[in-house]
Length: 171
Image 1 (tube, helix red, strand yellow):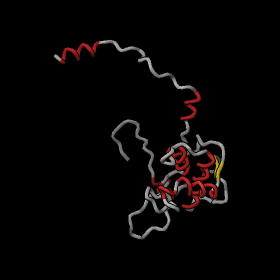
Image 2: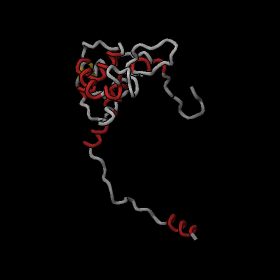
Image 3: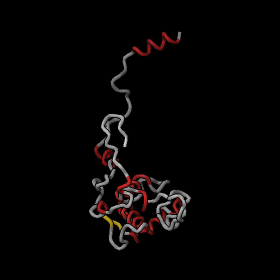
């Protein structure tokens, strides 16, 4: 009678704790609390420029995204020259809605083989380089927490916030 055994197991009380694990420390939480909002909240101190970012890109990014960010084999990062009538290629310069999101993604997820291994200065530099390569940032100016959120991305107004609260309405 498997059902009878299952019923008995379902009625046994569960322990309050299972005897493994521990609460996270404040330092462990701080290490993981690195998200950056579109308005720039959460950006770390520091800065980086496009020249530094270009050197880092050549070492840590070009193997997956190509020498200029247009070749691949993985996602294209730079819009570059597109063929008229061809399917529009999504890249940082024509698809990403916020420059701060570029920083956040690089910081958390790149490089693919060592995510989270870049310093904040390296991430600022890479972000400056990629925004400059897409014609969105002056490569001579250092990028930092104050000026990064001020960059208006071309695709910003093409995204609609999902502000549904509870119901079937869809935008």
